[in-house]
Length: 164
Image 1 (cartoon, rainbow, N blue to C red):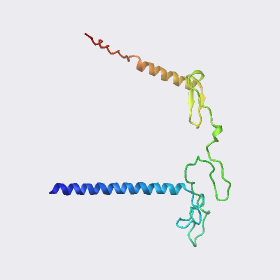
Image 2: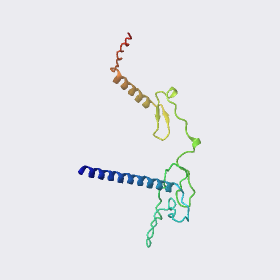
Image 3: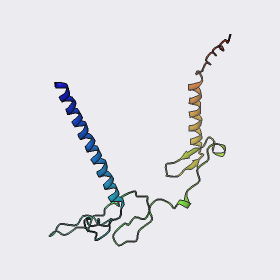
């Protein structure tokens, strides 16, 4: 008699977990839709629109602010376009260059063979200094020394099956 009770308890727990996951997914999708849709001012049932970026927290009544409101970070990706810096300022262009101003990729091999491509500044810069050439030569020498004794033997071929 104990087995059926355990099975019923496990089925109830499984159903509860499934209901919770379903509720969570529906709630999360509703929140994502609400965040992506622009709020319409004055619509009943909707909360008031969020304060503009840079408005920051307001001081408590009776206290004087030392340097004004604290600027807040704009929501979303910083490289998505115009970002207002302070309330009342004109939007500035974000750090991403316009789509027509992208660089051509650096071709590998050919004229750039045995040269260093430096990405530390955010752009691909081909360098060919004596220090870089010495480092490349040392690395090639180390690779050749490490692989000098490595050999791979071919697997013996199986004889073809006899068809009689």
